[in-house]
Image (cartoon, rainbow, N blue to C red; front, side, top):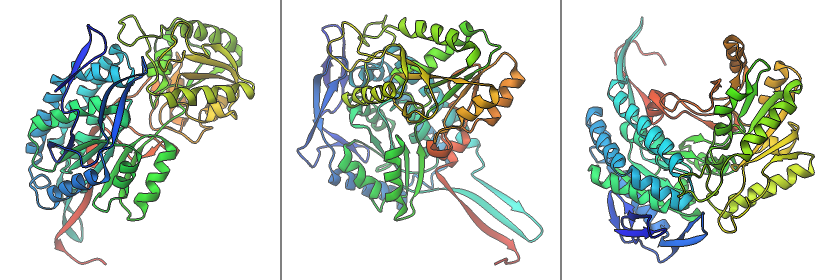
Length: 495
């Protein structure tokens, strides 16, 4: 165990910083490459860890393959798998304080954000999955005029779960635990930025007592990640990430027709009807747009307002954005910490510059906050005079930029909302619930919230268009990791 100190008062103990986690055990890595853990709030290197190699990846796949082909996990009663996953969840929950602290160090999120996303949402998501797994229709007999058939859900095989730095803990409940419940061995491919949280998570997995080979975890860089995606021993790739990377993943998995599920980015709209009290709307709209410095796939990055109320709404939004305190994530008074890495700041700056060239105007933010000379900080930024054809209205920033677009009427608002390649989430704010529901039904996205921001992560969640394939969470998120199998019990052949 290693204690990483961030100040004299704040430290966290991280297990096995010199090891990698393969087949349920901490082992010595096969290579000599290393990865620096950079604290985004200070740009200081706080640890150096091994970089997992392709040989490490091969070992993890071989163990997962053996666990599926010869091990007890796929054939184990779902109640027993749920019991072990509950033990895993208990171990995660016992480490939540450390996980929240480690996340602050490695990715810059505030403690309040960690407590909401990890302690709150994470534990609810995996708790729900574990509770419902034994109740699902794993098999049923169907009788019709010609036959009697046993229909089964069987585990799809070995799973590569690709995670992002902005939610490694809740993704245990959205992706990893559902795959395990379905009977699939899992290799968890953490983001390179998740070196500390990944070790705490895998330490919990080791304590849970999974059979040999059922779970491995590698916080690997690009070469090893690509090797895993291409590996013939992987039956399914389940990825959270960006659309550009997803297209590369699909190219690789298509060569062997491996099942691929994708939870990708968004350019989520919030339609504000004229009948709302904007002060009431701001209570959820502003956190929904700026939470996590915009490093949230469902961030409400496009706010659609009628021309009649445009200036009024922009003024109130700008005041709310300017009131957000950006700073040290370890300061309890801080609302937003830094972005997770330097490339995120550079992408934000590049896309902001392009937006200004195209005619957008800064209403709030637009720069590094005053007094923060080090760290990957950028003020929450509101842009006005944005049109739907601008890059900033079409492409995901994954950073703290929100745009306000004017619409002519609600039909025009729906048209603008649907005018991107994405379709992950959306919000509709309207006093008339029937109006809000009618608008919601017309928006092409995987989820819509009425007079709220966000989504339910205990029911099926995912996107349409280039926001992804498949669904996570709820019963559907578990059964995503299964194949249908029919066993003909009696009846006539029908070929």
